[in-house]
Amino acid sequence: MNKKELEEELANLKADYVRIQSDMDKLEYVRGRVSSAEAQLIRLEEEIARVNQKLDQLPE
Image (cartoon, rainbow, N blue to C red):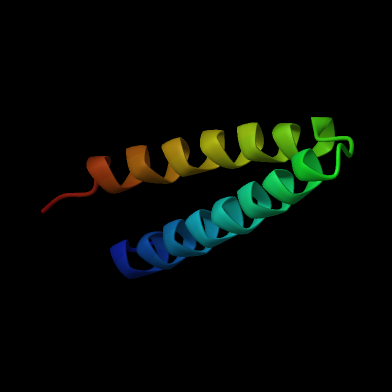
C-alpha cells in the first residue's frame, strides 16, 4: 500500500471508531449491552495502530 492508501484507510478506521463510540454512548444511556461495541473499539484501536506503524515505516 502506498502512503495515500494508508492515509485513506486510517481516516476510514477513525470514522468507524467515532461512529461506534457514539453508538456505545447511546447504548450506555439506555442501559444496553456495550460489550460488543467495546470489542469493536479495541479491534479498531489495534488496526489504527497497525496502519500508523506502516505509515511510520514508509520512506519520506
